[in-house]
Length: 81
Image 1 (cartoon, rainbow, N blue to C red):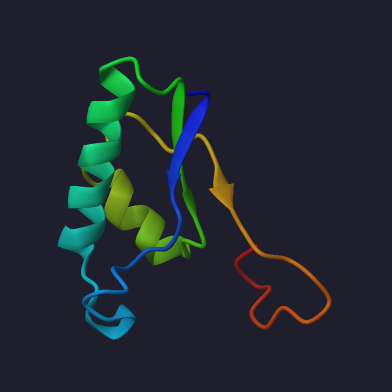
Image 2 (image 1 turned 90 degrees about the horizontal axis):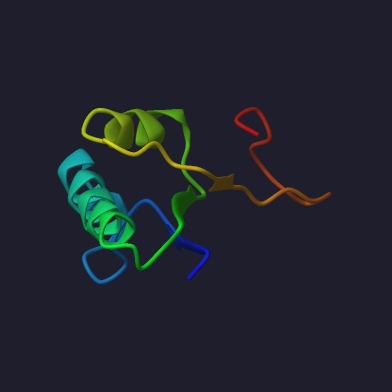
């Protein structure tokens, strides 16, 4: 696979309001295992704000190659794009 990413910085089954840095870090470590196994050529994130990115970078041995963001006329918070 060329690229694998986590789509959102929280676990919807738990509740977006109950996500934590530890959850994001655990998810990132799982993506790194996929990367190091050679099953993905790159790994990334989607819809992460600066604080979520910092959570990942605190434990990352492979930096995210992409932070996919939503940007269109109706987008609310464009300050972090």
